[in-house]
Image (cartoon, rainbow, N blue to C red; front, side, top):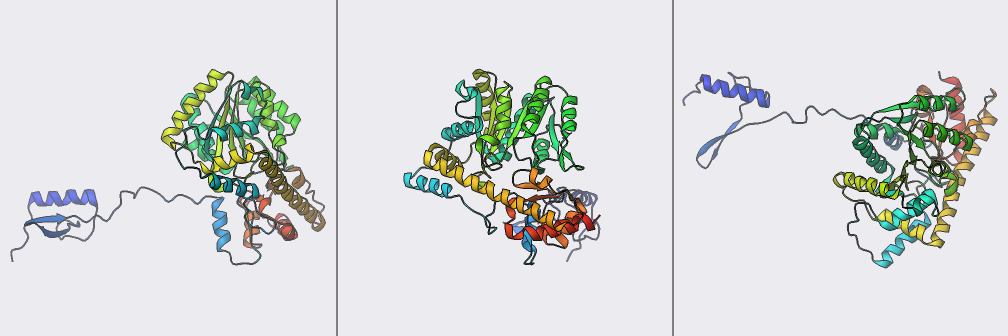
Length: 455
């Protein structure tokens, strides 16, 4: 059998193949995987073997800091374990729940035999009307005058992301101011939209309360015309909200600096139990005549976590401005997700549009908010009774909504998990929605131990 002969041309081809495809099974002369010869219709074809991926440069992404808590919780086999990481409501038995009014709305949809056709880009008209009415009040002059541009979007995250794309396109030199701390996804959203952001002071670790003077100073010092991201109610992660008087002062400063207020409203009705009370901040700014962005979500107050139902609202100075803004939001939504899903939108529209179901919803919402308030009170009582150092735990009661900022640092939070099997985010935030009355004393023991015995 004739031996293979190396020629300059053959060596060059082999070298090129090595450069493109990388090494593999070695050829004695080239040090490269040269492949396997096979017959193909009388011709000899060289099948090059490729053992490197085009995705070699793609690194592994870090785990999500919140969703990763649930994965760790599931892997723990202890009977004592408690998941206070993810912000999702649980019953007193610590089970997920579907609201009765949601079941009724879905049954109504089945009875009607409604189709699953595409929605328009802006979403379901009945939902858009209902969500703007809930946010601002049906008699609000901004609604009556046609100054509100509303687009149904993919819950709070999708609404924020759509607004971020709008800011990047039409306000490319503007910066977004974000509270320190804030919901973990806010920064991701603006980073991906290539919108620059900076932080303003919010949480004061010395008081476990609001650093209002620092907040005002940072907003005043920001470049004129900045976007100020505000939590409409039940600030995530701290549970610390400005008082009505502080909201008034914030509106003064934002108006003086010609800033644009941008509210993230994820807990309307779920924080206090009242839709109107939780919308106070947004309505105040609109009443002042400011143009305002508002992202809404129905994950918490209707329990529609998996339906991804929300809206982006832009309250404008005139109807023709609202028309132009809405047209450009639609233009941005079209290549992003084309049009939103219909199921959750019809649930919201049915509940809000039927007086009986609407009343039932408000009752169920008040019950959810009430359960969390009861748990918050019991936790405070347990901490105060068990802690013999005299530490003031009253900040627990001054916070609102499903979250509480415990004041625990990362090492102390690790102790909560490693020793006590209590899963929470590393910034010391706990979700009271995942706690029940029976577990409050156990949680108090863990917090006291972690706070006093772990540096």
